[in-house]
Amino acid sequence: MTVIVAGHTGLVGSAIYELLTSRNEKVVGINSKVVDLLDRKATFEFINDHKPSVVIDAAAIVGGIGANNSFPVDFLSKNLQIQNNLMDASHEANVERFVFLGSSCIYPRACPQPIKEEYLLTGPLEATNSAYAIAKIAGIELIKSYRKQFNRRWISLMPTNMYGPRDNFDLNTSHVLPALINRFVTAKRTGAANVTLWGTGAPKREFLHSRDLASAVLLATEKYDSDLHLNIGTGEDLTIMELAQLIGTSAGYRGQTLWDSTKPDGTPRKVMDVSRLKAMGWSPTISLEDGIKETIQWFEANYN
Image (cartoon, rainbow, N blue to C red):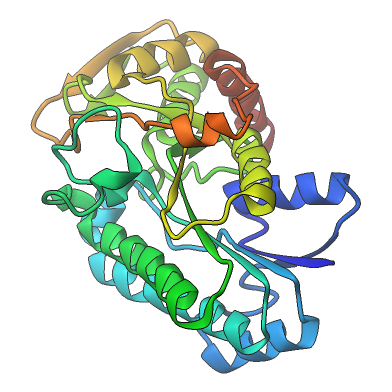
């Protein structure tokens, strides 16, 4: 059996790729150097040449609040093209299992907590990342449509906020956790007296280590078969202020943390209901504190 992992050098894709490799599966990775997934013809040729049994789509244009606000066309148009090209090519190649990875940002801004899968499309999206969310919602609908029209055993998985080694730590495009790691490690290195962060620190978020996600993805690939997308997360959250304190302490930073309340907070709270996933026998194994320490070590070893 051949498994293709699209986005195999990114945060999520690399963890999935490594876990499959450790299980002695035949794995083929895709990144931009292997094939441009925005190129429809090249994508079709690549999938057809390898004739995989499984395609796991972990490829996407991603970023934090600032990037989503600044480049909504990129986040909507390019993500639509990537996922459409992969799904259409996989259909033509008669791929048995396609796993589409989305994001918890698909849910309404004022969603009841914890967020159940059924809450999709029950209210307005968070404005700061609505373009990206719409692309992922379209991916869910395309998976459902392939199941309905062609009886494909394809599935959609919606991970919570991810982190881990090989994350994107660029302050202009990264998500909150890697951005905080960059800020606090840099502040420690430079001896900065204070670090100023966006917002109030009050919003609550849930975080999952990329290796825990990988194990959940492979379990779902083997056992899950429904047109209802499946939440993947820990089911536990904390405030951004608490997260900043944990990262600052783990990084050894001893200065002051300030908050710029003129900057947006984003969605007030976002924690997933993962009861369906846990009923399948899965649970996370990496604590947030341990995962952050590991990720800080990786950042310090790989970034100047």
